[in-house]
Structures are given as structure tokens and as C-alpha cells.
Image 1 (cartoon, helix red, strand yellow):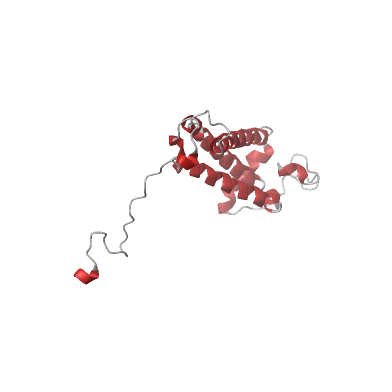
Image 2 (cartoon, one colour):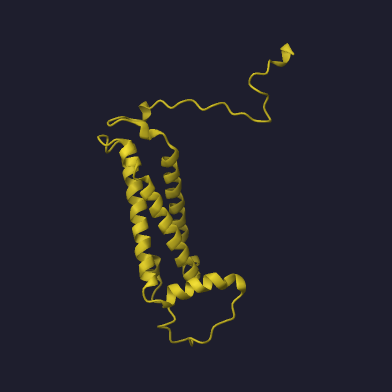
Length: 178
């Protein structure tokens, strides 16, 4: 989304006139994979647009599923059982995975375009928040609610006691009885 705000700085080699196509710098072995991805992403007429389409579909899946889940938690859709909305969660995870893969491809292709733009850091913060939100719904037990139920009324079973090698066992008598 930020590519359009670069002020017309064209980075595609097929339309640049300031650098000859055969003037390539020698590559280090660790840059081989990234340079091949960059070469395919930038020089192919369909890979970049197709990746943008996949990225947008992944964003739509992630955002749509998380929006539905959050609205259900907030009580907007009380008539819908949370278990039914919770079944959408794998689609949200698929969208997150699509965004991760296509985002890494964009970054490998044009790393300078993203590292020099402050908006990418804000976007990554929101991506992390979305991922944490998805994880919360994955491990949360609110899906046990019936239609019309409120999350505050849900009784959650107590956590089992934590056993640690640093703590004495729970069945050990007090020190005064030893």
C-alpha cells in the first residue's frame, strides 16, 4: 500500500533509464535466494500483481474473521453461537499465512522500499497485534457460550496447580511437623 507514496521513484529495471541492465554487482552467496526472489518479483509482468492480489485476499480473510470474532465477543451478534463464529478462525489463520508469505516476498524483492518508510513499522505493529488477537481466540474458551450468552457469565475451570522444581511438593508436610 505504501508503494504509491514514494513520489514517482521508479525501481523496476525494465523502465529505468539511468542504469544499464547488464551492470549488475557481484552477489554474495547469502544474497542468492533473496536476489532470485527479487529478480522474479520485479522482472515478471504478473508475479508482483498476483502477489498483491494474494496479499489483499489474505488481509481480507484475516481482518474479516477477526472483526466477526471481536464483534461477537463485544456482544453485537449475540444470536450467533460463538462456536459457529469460532469455526471461521482457520480461515483467518490462512489469511495471516498468505500475508506472511507474500509480505516476505515483497520485502525480499524491494527491501529498501520498505526499510526506508516509517509506515512499515506501524504496519508491523498492527500485524503483531492481529496475530496476538488470533492466538487469543485460538486458546480462549469463550466459544463455550450459548447464543445470547455473555462472556462475563462464563465459568472457567480453575488452573491446575503449578509444579516447579523450585517449590516443595504440595503434599509435603509443613517444616514444623518434620
